[in-house]
Image (cartoon, rainbow, N blue to C red; front, side):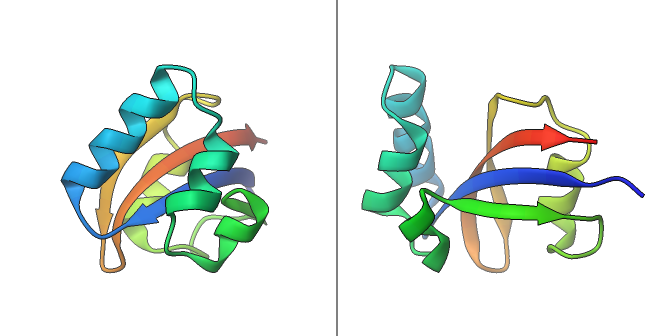
Length: 92
């Protein structure tokens, strides 16, 4: 079965998500941006969600993690929790 590791940043609005994505693409550290802005408890680990398999995360999140480009900041991805920026760190 496929597995992946990823980091994410969760915020309330698409506008905030886009602004943070721009900061990261301009050189800001993903982990630091997560610590300062994410509403998910994973922010304490720089947004790191550890390893997981398909079906462990909500559908919209899973679709991106198991089909998106590894190492690229993806999003905004809207889920029931808000808007995510996702960085797939590894997939196997």
